[in-house]
Image (cartoon, rainbow, N blue to C red):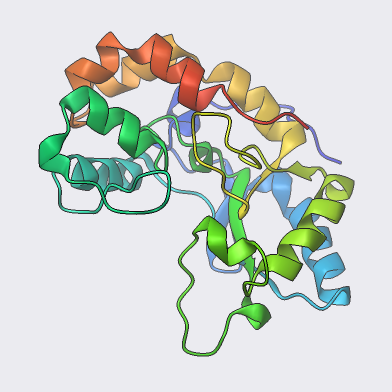
Length: 229
């Protein structure tokens, strides 16, 4: 199991530098995650699941585009039940909290590190159906439920865990989101409010003044508030 020998620079940590990444099946992941992910995929295959990457590394600019589009009402802001909210009825502060339930603050996404990956079993997805990455798909008798059960029973053997396994009142539950603990835990400690403030001040992030004024609270509720291994 690989541990992190060289912590990331601020630019790498916040998705502005990709030099810590490698290509993996058309996505980019942290170089130190490659072997563990391959082993997890192989085990999943033996169990009958085609473990597929829906999302891996996401750049700062990509995360900012998602954030700004939601803030400007160009992309839906969902409530805790995945239902769209009326952005015109929300204050800037309320918008920020609503967006953070499902989308990370630019610079603070765990996807910037390349250690965190959204996964699904491609062979379990019904033909003609598009993956939504919504909790219901992984629950009950839905198409990803058996794969979800397999992940729960097996990912820790390969160094992975689910930081959003349950809803702790910050980020909503994301059963598809797995993280390579030996590296991501080191990087989480490096991702401090002061580091984030440095980056956000320099970028055209919507709601910037409210974000910076409330960053310590947002950090505690949505960034550092995760499930432990």
